[in-house]
Image (cartoon, rainbow, N blue to C red):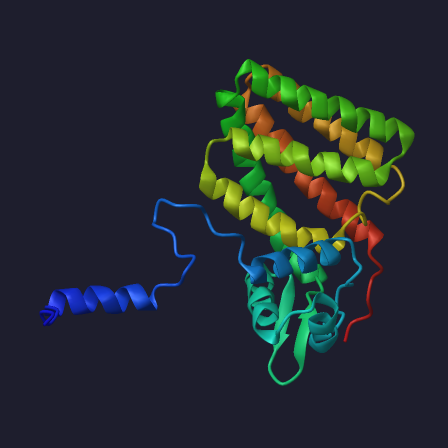
Length: 246
């Protein structure tokens, strides 16, 4: 007659039955990206491209059908985008793509100027030769896109240029805050660059930033970057139609 299992053996057997067949140890393979994160990225790109326009209502049922998913990952994705400021969840009304007001822009751009100015200050002190070389490549691309009037390509290269400087600061908090605000500013994508002469103005501002970085003049780099961001705000004000007071 077989001996009756001890309590320890019984618990071990029960845990084995509960464990999924494909369970892996903590040091095993990393799980795939969560579904809601993939959905969030798809929606994020649609918002940045203005396929989902500012102020537009997000049809959750249509997205569920189009993506072949349930409402749960979609709603989790929308919460992520709401935390980033890209969508607004309104009780009993649904979810809308965030619409940036003039007040929002007046609040955001001075913050961006401070954050990116500080990034440039720190980057000027910390860059290595290979870091500066990468910035020079991006700077040359920006010059080429300016000469060709290629606003779309200038915009994308400009995003890379600013991110490189933020990363060179070596300050992860600066990087995180600046990138979060830049996501929100992408809701106004291309408007300022479409203003007559703004592409050339922006390029001239980049020349000042690069000149300061090359000479490791941290104070000049900070001032140049701040001026660049505030000039972008002024250009955006010229681009957006003035709404009558409510």
